[in-house]
View 1: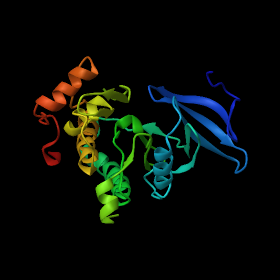
View 2 (view 1 turned 90 degrees about the horizontal axis):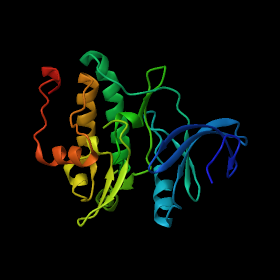
View 3 (view 1 turned 90 degrees about the vertical axis):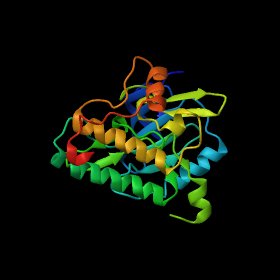
View 4 (view 1 turned 30 degrees about the vertical axis):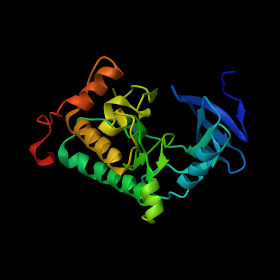
Length: 236
């Protein structure tokens, strides 16, 4: 049954639908216990025990540039509600620099905890009216088993889950690293790749990898050398 304004998810009361995709819906909701608004990401499926355990690990992230995870339900995540606009380009290099530095700080804070985002894209990055960058939507994030064991700390195109002979493709085609596109294990370098693709888009206002379908875009990711000539020379 579809959610409507006024419905409750656990103790949270839905206010308005703010996003929808293949993975489910995102609602602005209210927590009457703490008298604060939150964002609830509702999955189309029940979470596995492993996902719930990992989600609680994500809750340990405490960084200005990362949207905070407050709670985990059987099929939903309760997140900090962030006012602001999606990251957009084009921008002059000097204007983009402080924003991209905050994005780097947020990504590094997750990596230091052994957490890989796996779905970084402009639509998952908000800039508040005060100019604070917030990385959203850790719904596809995973713990980096290597990091944990060693003790080291098209933009609106949908997030896709595509089964392949090699594995499962998770992410958004235009921002996926080649190893993700092949269904291989993602690690920190996958997020770094996505950051580079986002940086190009912020500076130029154009997507680095384009196509009429996810398959065509993934073909470009796998087979074409990225052409970054449109980016300022100082950024290349």
